[in-house]
Amino acid sequence: MTRENRRKPRSQLLIWRRHWRQAWAQAWQLLWEKPLESVLTLLVMALAALPAAVLWLASEQLQGVELQSQGDWVVFTRTETSDTEARALAEALRKEDGVQTVTVLSPETVLQQYLQDTAVEAGLQQMAAGIFPWVLEVRATPGLSVEKSTRMAVDWQQHWPQIIDQVDHDPVWQALRMHLARFLTRSLLWVSLFSVVILFFVVSNTVHLRLRRHQAAIEVMQVLGASNAYLRRPYLLASMLGGLLAGLLTVLLLALILLSLSRPWHDLQQGLGLPPFELRLAGRGLWLWPLLLAGLSLLSARISLQKLRSS
Amino acid sequence: MIRLEQVSKRYQGSAFVLANISVEIAAGEMVFLTGHSGAGKSTLLKLIGLLERPNGGRISIGGLDIREVKPRGIPWLRQRMGFVFQDFQLLDDRNVFENVALPLRILGLDERDVRRRVSAALDAVGLVDKGRVLPRTLSGGEQQRVGIARAVVHRPAILLADEPTGNLDPALSREIFELFRHFNDLGTTLLIASHDLALLREMNQRTLVLEQGRLLHDP
Image 1 (cartoon, helix red, strand yellow):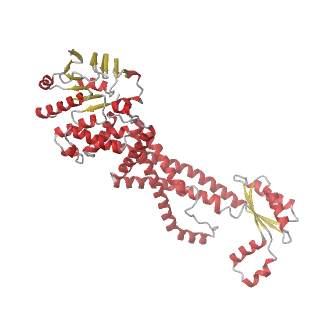
Image 2: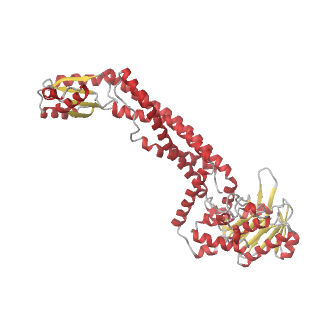
Image 3: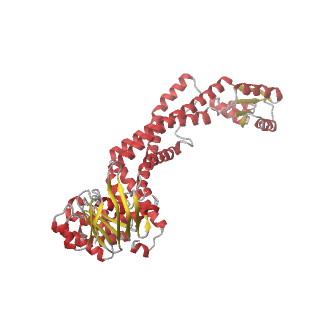
């Protein structure tokens, strides 16, 4: 219908790229048109996400790294056990139902650890070298019952009496850890659910405020032929950017909290004689946090923008 | 170009705003629409501009029956029309250039084309040096000229104007109508709603008269 448009067909891809470029610019404008409002919104989003982030971090590090580093069973061989026998035993244990991993520590490694822990003088090192056994740190598959793990410890000792001197197994500690893991997982689920609900309301409210502020412009653009996607895109991108920034802010707040708590936590651990464990700003999930928040914000904004239609 | 057959429109809980309107407007024609307030002029423009849907009858634009247009196709059709409003509907937070550039940005034109076409449109309405100013700093007549530049910048086939001179004095109104005539000479089909009878007589164009939703006169 338009004379020039007919004469000069434009590439749809080029139009799409230009629309995206415009949308990015408008999204930044939306974020910065009310800086204080944006900062407060980001802060509320970060605070809403913070409990879930703390629990996630604790859950991942408690369950996955620190507490299981000693293994669920610690198998001490007899001192005369050879390298081949120790490794054959490790191989046999690996095939056991209920065993996840087996870490083999040679007598030399055990000696080094002993020296580090007890600060035995260097002169005693050679003397001590001959008295250390092979140590196998065996980790159970998650969810293995306390009864079964205890039975397995007894079975191993009976099955390999020539090689195994002793199996250390603390069913109380294992049960405690299992309960702790279950508690953390369930708490994480609930806290995450609350965080998602709060995030949804915050993002939805922000989108509605922005729509109201730009209602006149939106109506004019609708009349001029802006499509639904064209109208929604800046609001979606602004929400996504907001989520990303809020996620980064969450990580920053987490770092500050961990930094301020590290000393009192260390003192508490020593005072109560707890196993050494320190929450660190690390872990797979943590660095996905900003992306997760960006995705959630995008989804919330998309639901909130459902009513915005150009036709 | 525009064909209405037995078109009716009523809003929920009200009487018919338009009843059995049949009219045909050829490509390149300039048609005025007049009548008292509430006669249905604005509604008729909204129906043609796809801002409202009729309750009965058939509207076709460029041979396309709008009943067959899916919601996704409506923006596409609107991009091929220009709209001029009585209250200008300019965006206060954007300067004149950006206001006029709006339809081109929606069409996805490249920046060079946008600059060229906006300059040409502003030149055509005599505001080429006002690109950087905000609309609210302009007079009513200038703001309406910006509105017209925005309506024609993407060279639409159809231009719909709803009381474009309603807020302007007679001298400025004449100026605006002359602008419309200029764009009509370039081939644009125009449908203009106005109740300024003196000016309509002066323009000496086909004039449709609406009265209480019915077409009273179509020469």
